[in-house]
Length: 370
Image (cartoon, rainbow, N blue to C red; front, side):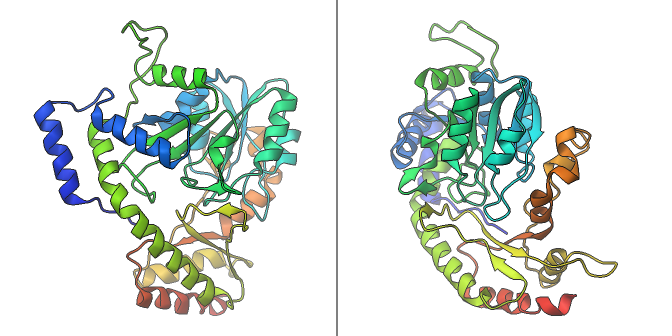
């Protein structure tokens, strides 16, 4: 459903030549620092920490916050979210989502809190921001850490304020599937500078400023080649954003009259990250066959159009989580319906007007699939 934004090849070649000339390939080199500076400015962040992956950034943030026991999260997310909680040494506890927003339902979060709960990991979905105020209120009243998985939310703002201004920490993904990317990578923004410094120490073997390990860390630094790719992608991001805005408008216009299909539209006060264009294909499953969403997916695939079930299955249904009490299907009705109905359409600057029109025509056949 996506396509990686290509770098400026000449610029990338210059960066690679500079790396070869200086033999600086890692360890907070000049390209790493240049990318850190530009992202700090563009994200309006006081401090950012660059990682080899967003998953590593999320694990490290949780370790830096000393989470333990139980961490409440959403089942409607990518595997990295609960896996990071597990790798940080805690147990995921799944709470249901809001049916319309698809983000964690604050009321269900509060109901899931126990004496063992130490944190909440909420996820901004498809660029839709969580109910950050409600979650901050819950976290403050129960003395819990609040971390946002913002993999889908690079550039998302609420009334002009970047989403990382809420919570103890936010993690953005710069994987190749994202609009701005470094091939693999992640960005951590922390509210507390002490936590940010600890996270940066943990990503570098736990080394203190004198080069002696102060605690047990790992190696999850962003390399110079990743930073070079990111710096080379940046010049093409504005044009890609513009193309995606036009594509989103075309989708909204052409899909508005299709029964049983509804575009996932963000409220006016949330600035879209333009990472995905999602639709909800509702309705019962066909007799002895796939759901209407899956029938739609198969129809598009038969015409070499690649959409994506995102997220399916729920994380709560993974073999290593499905026996948890919180993972039982009866606890998660809204998440289950989202997993069976949400579909991400092709969404990148390479989708031509003709291709978008063809997709709309195929989706117009939805009623004939049941």
